[in-house]
Length: 363
Ligand code: NAD
Ligand code: IPM
Ligand code: MN
Image (cartoon, rainbow, N blue to C red; front, side, top):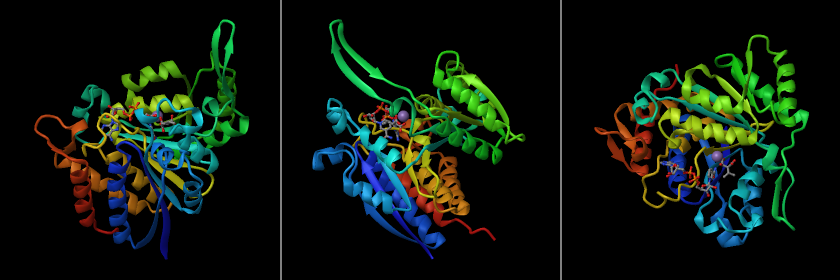
């Protein structure tokens, strides 16, 4: 029996708009592949701060713990930017990731046919782009000790970047496992010429590589990597890196796909439970207009079927539906070029649902 509990956390800004399309696609896929979904909606981020004075309410954490998978929109926005740290929307994401042990963040950047012309990069540079950023998600500078103090010479602010060997080992190992299923190449990205934590990272990556003789390992410094991602992006397969480098490099990689509105993500730990969310944020500049690109969220739902429900066929059905909608020239504003039909968030989602309905099950 394919009964699944899914926690849905729409969040702030465009979060509710894109989440609605994600849920629509999830329900349609469920219907076609025989799932029975129980959905629990929860408050998160700024909207939770406004209602309950905390970005991550206990009740939200509870429904996430009880869920097989979590779908999240986005959090944050100018209304809360000056809040003290415990009342910042972004704190909810860090809390969820840490509490649920979701240390591995997968961010695939794949170029859909026809979208190269929507990117600011040249079409010939983008040919064959299909990379996966594997970002460490529960350690590093995001979670190290931090404080601000007043000194005689003015204010002083400190953040610390800490990695334990076991944290590096488990994420690198997963990167190698995924590389095995893909292009058999891992680029481990660090700043080993400067940072102690990076030197440990490089050492551990080198040792883990010994267990995967069929996968090629290369080390790359993060500044060079930022450059190579736009110089020769098709040469990357799996990029594994620490928390903050992964955050930055994945937004950069989004441009290889045409728009940040195209990039999905999955955050997973040891079990099947995962948190699925677009890589982008709450996009306050376009919130409430119904024009946000829902593809990142819809592809995150595909990742949910693949990783949490172990259903590759359903995941592929969603990805193929998105491909067909794009093939017909349908685009949201962020990727539309002259000659394209610019659709609203909702219209795009409806088209994906229509395409899904045409899916023929695998024989
Ligand atoms: P952002 O990703 O929200 O927006 C950057 C730019 O990309 C904006 O011009 C926006 O309009 C555009 N964009 C983003 N998503 C889009 C989509 N689906 N379709 C079309 N265009 C899209 O980044 P930002 O402006 O730096 O951050 C805004 C807020 O979001 C901040 O409060 C930040 O902390 C938060 N944030 C949250 C998450 C998350 O919830 N996972 C991720 C990143 C940023
Ligand atoms: C992301 C976001 C978050 C991060 C912020 C909002 C905490 O940028 O998911 O990429 O930095 O991890
Ligand atoms: Mn980010």
